[in-house]
Figure 1: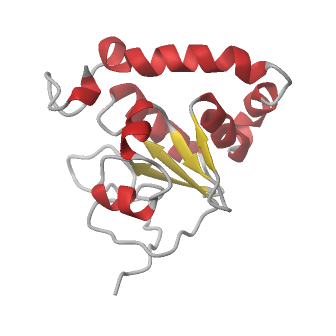
Figure 2: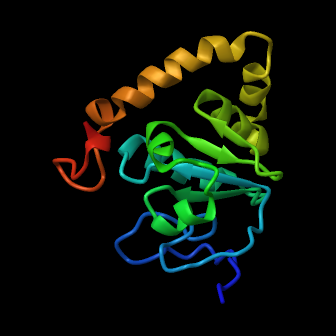
Amino acid sequence: MAESYERPSNKPVNANSPLYARPFVNASIIFSTMNTPYAVLYDGRCRLCRSQAELIARWDREQRLDILDLNDPQVARHFPQVRPEAAREALHVVGPQGQVYRGAEAVREVVLQVPRLKPLGALLSLPGALSLANPVYDWLARNRYALFGSTSSPTCDDEACR
């Protein structure tokens, strides 16, 4: 039987990890229920994605977000509605009713949940804002490894880094 996912304290996951355990799930945890309304699926191999996930985690004082590395196989099993290939291309957020947000729309959902970022979420909610934000997000997502590098190694170990 799977253990329940329980949000750990703010202690580092391990001595080598800059990630704080509060909103992150490590690969050894098998979770059957989520304690927060939103699951944020980010690419932990991407230096930009990882730094932004850490920042959001620190700002998520109300703990409304579970920030999960999509490269963790257990994350993929827990969210079958998100194709792993698609999740490697863009940020994905799974909402309280299982709805899936992708790319700039996912960014909007995340910032709407973090009080200090709500003004940005309000801007992204204006009519036409996502039609401007989507191409910018898509370009950045396509070029994130070239611009910011990978956290796994100097050379990427799979096609997602190219």
